[in-house]
Image 1: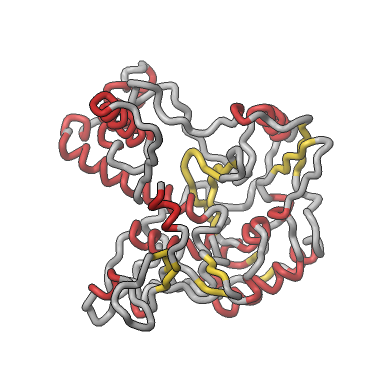
Image 2: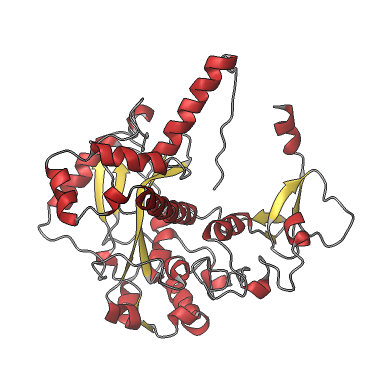
Length: 402
């Protein structure tokens, strides 16, 4: 605990090569400017995490600074679907999986901003409370300036045509009236929040487990679930952004992150989904680099990617899915019998509830994927074994590394 409090007094140093900034007790060898140990050990002419290797994002211009989450969604070419909620105390978390959808191909190539009436957002208000929704504020001039800048400077926006008719319908500065609203009488209690709690004791796979993926909404509270469901069912036809019905293949789409988060990658530089680099860098290392990437503005350190409300969850979920696919390939190589199962056989297993054995085998491989239910089940068992051997701790910390 003393070491932790001492670390709060460390000074932050930023590497001149990778632009990552982190608190350190000292910067080691006396040299100015500072270079981190990883970059100093890299003797290649083009360092892995350097601007020469396309790893340094460009500075965010004034036109793209300060956009609200709804404004960013209005100008995004790709729509990430992910469930984000707020835990007691204000900390945000996510559950389920993230899916990336593109707009309809014709509209993707021709027109932005999105139509406000088609935004999949529901505003949840508490009666009698001072409800503020700063992330849902839309400023017409801000959206217009952002789109004009992107069309001129971002390569993935070069073919975009700005729809001035839709732009004119945006509020000058306020919450759009087109957004659907529901009202509830009181806030939910802390214990009513329903995050992904992982598997039950001694059960690495539960056949009743529900996997879900919903729209961005920082509220996932039980008393409001039925209200939201009722709101959706009021209309026989639910509007949705014009998009392809199939999720994008993130293994093949270049500049996917730029299209989903244009305010983070103004001109596409530093995009972790861009494979055109001089030296190969794994996706996990790219994301770690971006989370620690920092800028020093007005006497304060700014971590653009770590502070974004959705990017870290989107990126972490992508890493998880890539690792799950890798573990799946290992499973098929080591279990040739299951590798020959046909779609019809799998459907038959689902219909007859005889898939538990197969799923338990898969979950055994999933324990190697950081953050998965099987991973936490294994961590819990390791903790139990430690307590059985050395006794219960008075306090302990558990950290995971991507």
